[in-house]
Image (tube, rainbow, N blue to C red; front, side):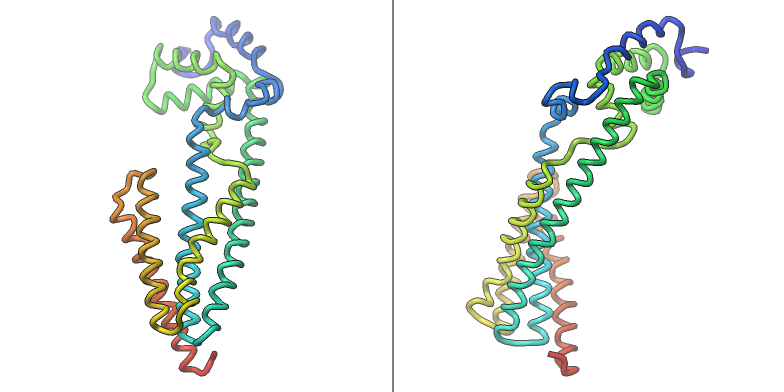
Length: 266
């Protein structure tokens, strides 16, 4: 059987045994900073922070504006302001808690799979090596080139483990601390959600709603432009997409509010 067809050739056995002995038994043996060493793409954590901030701000802008529009269609006066503030606080807390739970769950799952892959590297090295071979065979590598890639990857336990996590399981260390994610989303939601509420501090009715929509739309355009610095999208398109979705939400919510008002609810 050729090495390209899978399996181990006899000459590889000694090298594999040596590599297996070099694989740490626990993650801690990689050192106190093993998490950073295992995935040197540190920008992914930054990307996680940007994702959380963008999610929180956009959700605050759109959800609070939409709720205000619905209430404004059915009621008048301070009721709209109170509803907006309530939605702002409740939404920020809910989003923050959700971000915390999500980040902690992903982190726990990532570390569990990391431990499992590490154990399999020590106990089933030939199977894990074959999985590496299959991954890169699927990418077009063949013959000696394929074996060179496999040998290079499995010669370093850290690289081997990282490749197994990313290529086999599709998991990357693109997460920050759960508490940091929660605070980022919480603060971003508060900042974003405050924008549509402010006009109702100084006014009411359709006039305040119109101003709220305009300033929120402007904020969404800015948020979209900021997002494009990291995604490569066109700023105008990203901003207009957000404004379009917000417009639909406001129209639907306000329409439902008016129907409820006409029906005598509120």
